[in-house]
Figure 1 (cartoon, one colour):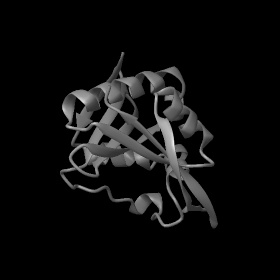
Figure 2 (cartoon, helix red, strand yellow):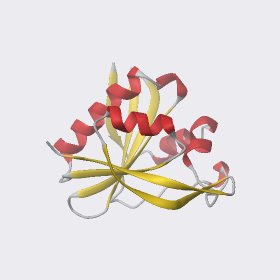
Figure 3 (cartoon, one colour):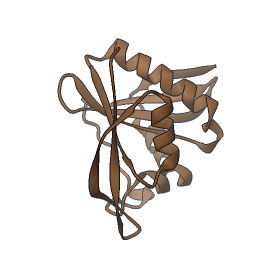
Figure 4 (cartoon, rainbow, N blue to C red):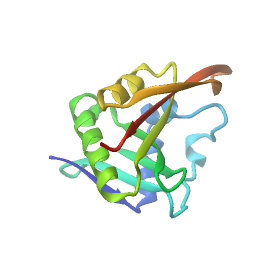
Length: 152
């Protein structure tokens, strides 16, 4: 049974982030190597873990930009790609609308990350813009696609 719940266990989130399939796909050239990764303990950041029974599948990070607009990042282990991640995404959206004052969620997704773009669209996020040449990966600049969803 898929569950999405808030966590204050930054060590668990950090370990997930450092997973080679997650870290290499999530960071730009300015990020430290995985062994030097430090997560923000800022109390405004909200970390949510995704579990299937006791197995951890991934996480979401929410960052408030203001009272009603939050940015988010989602990452899943390869074993959760597909239906489990989609189910978790729907649960995440419900959790946000029920447990935060957010009316708007946004995500900045590098244009080369077709899996993340498809995931965002399946969850109902829509493209509202592009931030050109704003993500440096492997020495190459990429656009970021700006995606968002509003509380219904």
